[in-house]
Image (cartoon, rainbow, N blue to C red; front, side, top):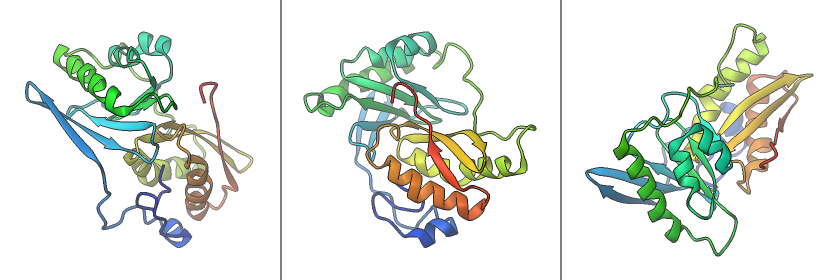
Length: 230
């Protein structure tokens, strides 16, 4: 998981974070493989988390927001595609965003991507061929969206997450969700590839916190909320 304001694992320093320089003119390197079936092309891209890969089906995945799945039961109730992906032995979690799907595998050296990838390609292609809905029901409301009940500080925080932080984190196959803001402490939840990424703590403390404190001085600290599956 990259720190906002950096490219790959190369840091551009606290000054860049404070200035909000999330984008650079350097092309983000990626390892892409392409497969096709019936004129459908699926790209796969590596992430900073060695146990997570991003798959681009070339089709819209979600109209808005993101959805995370961490077990077969949850997937079976909410998404036919997630249910199918969890049938693949070794799949640990599935994450949907607007135009990509992040699949994370178990942290086991015996479970190799060169075995999992063809099965994942197959399930994604079958799903889009069947023209099924990605979810059985509408996704939950995006917690990063500003509401009429938000305080001015919370509005600033959410706008910063949506405009500057989320796009960078999604490039690495993950997401960040606003949880709460109380007593000058912001609590957030990491999703997708960022959930188990070895560098997620560094990203949270040295990147996200510094940027938020620069734009919203009221924020004294940023804490990660973890769920049972973490």
